[in-house]
Amino acid sequence: MKRQMINRECLICKNVSLVRKDGAGKLCRSCRAKENIKNNKPIDITGIRYGKLICLSISHIVKKLYYWKCICDCGNESVVSGSRLRNGKTKSCGCIAASQKGLSTSPAYRSWQAMIQRCYDSKVAHYKRYGALGIIVCDRWRDSFLKFLEDMGERPIGKTLDRINPYGNYELSNCRWLTPKEQAQNKKK
Image (cartoon, rainbow, N blue to C red):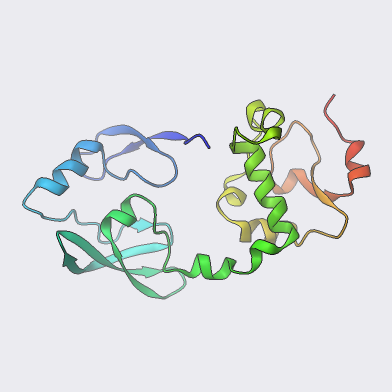
């Protein structure tokens, strides 16, 4: 999957640099290096949001690695290393993973996963008819299966995900569940 890049302002030096869109890269490369070198003083990330977590204060230090006390949108508190917050590896207290457990076997999950793959994974056979043509998944669905499930509901038996406009993106206003026979009437020409 190709990483999307965006221009983002560094939290420290305020210089704009190209970073990954997936949440990593709150600091420019030189400020990240300075953070590690400079007298081992942490960058103050108090009050900054990372996914569902908001940093409250430094909890403790282990081998020059700072751990931050954070509060999650669900209300739970957790302690996370600053590096995992900044690189986007930790986005919640664990409530996201816990809420998705057991859902990976549902038919809707398999449809969601296939949709993501054909739009973003160039190794998948159908990529050339979707992602290569610029068809994308809306941010709401791309980041969360639960939001996809909330919008589309569980996949009915015998039906698959269909786009109303075959040239449009995957989004609530352009998707529905149809049988393969009904989908055959809605193909690109």
